Length: 100
Image (cartoon, rainbow, N blue to C red; front, side, top):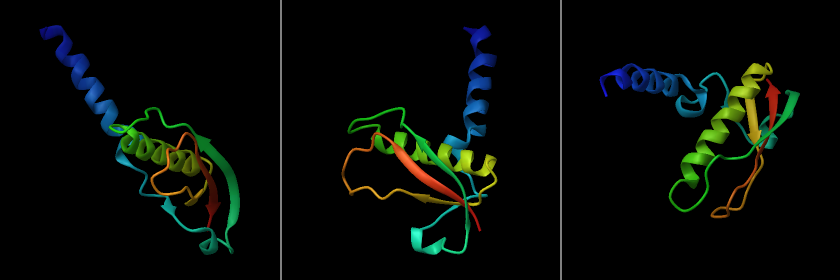
């Protein structure tokens, strides 16, 4: 059991460093009408890793944060997420990344 402690600590530290969990403060979200003067950098999509009534929100938040991290890596600072109907299940997060 004692030998598992360093592994557990390493996993916790890795999760804290994962942008999917911590967010991406360098990238903001915007609406489509707010990016008219910006340059489109890329289209990004990602499937949430978990679904269902218990974990869907966390999976969606994680996927959105990972999309924002990809946008940052592509050189964007703003993301416009595709609008979805409130309360509907999301199986694919889609966004456009812009440099404003």
